[in-house]
Length: 222
Image 1 (cartoon, rainbow, N blue to C red):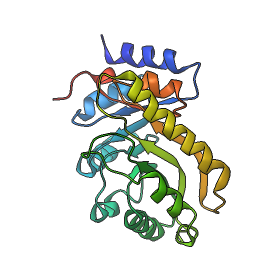
Image 2 (image 1 turned 90 degrees about the vertical axis):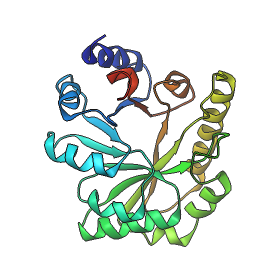
Image 3 (image 1 turned 180 degrees about the vertical axis):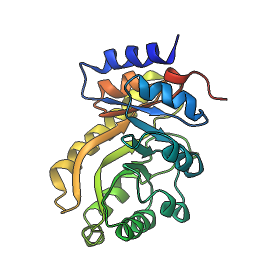
């Protein structure tokens, strides 16, 4: 199947849902990304800053770039002038650095708090209690150059669909709880980033607004 066909197929399946497609471009060359752009995609997700920067420089300016992988504080400065959204805010110190770098460019950076929902130690993020406490703290209101748009979560890598569904469902319930309780000037919950190539269909059924899909578009990574 071609990239264009894969994109059309996914878009057709997402059309009746509230979720939109973020094309995960990790390891794929600029020429491949251009094909996806020409097929109509405008939201791309990269895992690593060192890949994101040259791709953003080479490709059209109207692309919305999402940083979806683990982000080190010392790398924020390289993407602060153009990144559209950072999905992987997994600690308060990282959000503070994003705010600091955004301030230098006089812009607001959209962020999602990454919540650890998987039964795997290799995945990162706030636990539920930490996230709730942080979002209700005065510290959040002091960060004038970030906007917390919602949450991101990665389910356990397993064939057990019931477990995956339970993890996504739990995150959706937590999202709705915070949405109704949090009143901060720079918190505007509207995005719930759940689902990748292997489990996006479950994530969409459980309320995802963004699915991060790579191999189902571009094929196996090199």
